[in-house]
Length: 397
Image (cartoon, rainbow, N blue to C red; front, side):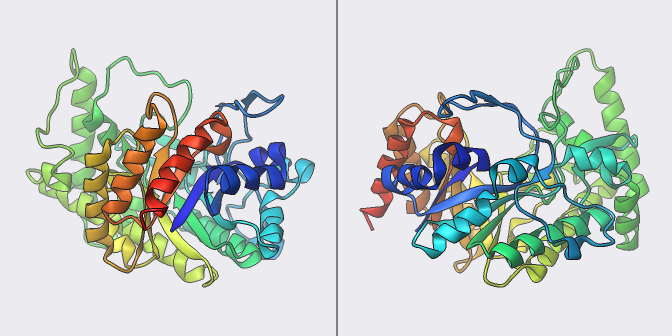
């Protein structure tokens, strides 16, 4: 069983390779480390660091050494994090340790969520129905953005040959909680967030139009919905069966419905290009959420072009976790990897028994593995919670 923990390079640097393995394999009972290979900005409380209790990583950098030959002539190129030069290439250190009996390696790779690159290349970011840029989200319809992600994965898999690579955000992203210091006096609901996330950039307009999609009509409908949202005294639901009905919540607007049906194509085809260009020794899986269609993900289609998916079960009690895993297995089929992702955050989970029950529910419902979040962000004693969860699913096998 694949048992991993999402981990930042600076956490490995703080604890050392032996200390990290002692925690993850020895104390928590895991067999894999999911290392951030490409990541965005943030502010992190680091309870386990002796000195660095608050950490602000560079925005939109990579935590490996890119192959300059692969990137020659590319429009969008990665930036190696200063951390790599100053404190060492932790991915290479883990690869070296794996050869000596260390843990398996998965590369946790943020794809299109990159504000630094979005600011540098605004012509390649998603744009709402009014043409406003979402600088944090490179667009999966943009040829240059696609080339960037495909080359990124090709680079890291060919040079380091991880056992698995996890794709985070190879899709369209939401509007809220993707930037920083956001202001919303309207009080958006989830419908409003979705409508503001729909992309009508030049690349999407051209790609959709070429596929026969009524892009101009869809953009006009979405623009009207957004304008009406901005004029209401208080927020109001417009679509009673959203998000449960998926795109059929919008069936009364044929142009918009056709657009939403097409919107999965850029994501699915991008994941296929990524998989086709990656080193064949590395399994390529998607990280996704319950309602992945909101970001343009068709899990069944994606499962046909890569090796599987990790579905995040944040906030879900055991029954909801089981339902999501069963739906994921039905979409992916019996032969693809299906993982469940959990945060070991309080009060999202409140005890070892709590996380153990959720983990067991996932495995009983068909999950092949579990990813826990996040090594450097939780107190050391919660590694014992993870161990109880792991023992509950491995000793029963």
